[in-house]
Image (cartoon, rainbow, N blue to C red; front, side):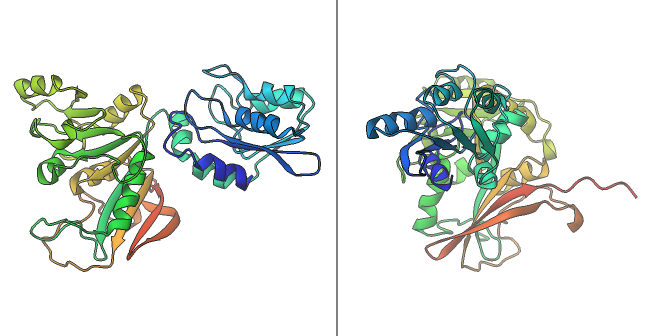
Amino acid sequence: MRRALELARRAEGDTSPNPMVGCILTDAEGNIVGEGWHHKAGQPHAEIMALEDMKQRHGQGHTAYVSLEPCSHYGRTGPCCDALIRAGLRRVVAAMVDPNPKVSGRGLQRLRDAGIEVTVGVCEAEARRLNEKFLLWVTEGRPFVSLKFAETLDGKLATRTGDAYFVTGPEAHRYSHFLRRTHDAILVGSGTVLADDPALTTRLVPGRNPVRVVLDGRARIPLTARLLREEGRTLVVTGPGAAPDKVACLRELPGVEVLSLPSGGPNGGLDLQALLAALEERGLTSVLVEGGSAVLGSFLDAGLADRVYAFVAPKLVGGAGALPAVGGKGIAAMADCASVEEMECLPLGSDWLLTGRVCFAAPRASR
């Protein structure tokens, strides 16, 4: 199963809105006779790829190890559970049940009805971590939200003069581009665009560019901004205070869509719930929020964060006026803070990446 999970991860960033899935086929003696993984949405699923590999090897399958329940419905491809039945498999081991309402146990039941032995739950925690974006999107109907920032050891995003080049080194910078390609969308505020004029691409790694999303309530970003000229799609999110003539000019740019949202967020900002609903309507299952400080804080204040990626550099900036990594209103009592669980730590050159699931504290009863 761990080999199946390893194969599944090879397609990270390429399968959305589908999950990443890997499949291993073994013969009656436990020898691997077929391997496969889902490469891209619309292409054959992992089970079909493994069966084709087994055919090329002239093997005979007995057991299938699949990192997610085989599908039982017709989409752009046929049901994988039927393909396993036709291939004469005797046993199927699945890491977890697929919570997609179109599947949700039906594939496993069809296998059992065909007389195939079914085992579920092998390496389930690893499988859930692998497809956490898909699992949240398919169960809650909103994009998975990742907060990403680079900070110094004393928690600063920039110096007191606003200098933020470069907080972290090249290894961390490259990894941040990898994170971009594993999300459907990347989001920043207008302040970041005005200060840094970022391209918001994946130029340091191979792969597609995510949809660029800019929160620009008053339509302040210039029409010459780099992200408006880069290949791919850009969504500029404006509010009631945006000038109509500027919005009209933005709409005329190729690859640019303007979305007008009501205010309603913290401190009068844009309605982030409405924003996520709009992203979901556009088929975007995950969003990487890169900043700046106020935007990161607004998502945290709204309780809209599922994972955090904190790049920490061994530097000390100091200064009460230096910008903190996460701004916003914040909490009043430590007992109410969000916790970061299932922590992972990855060294990147002289820097560190700390990541974990964000869990919000339950509201306390009023005293």
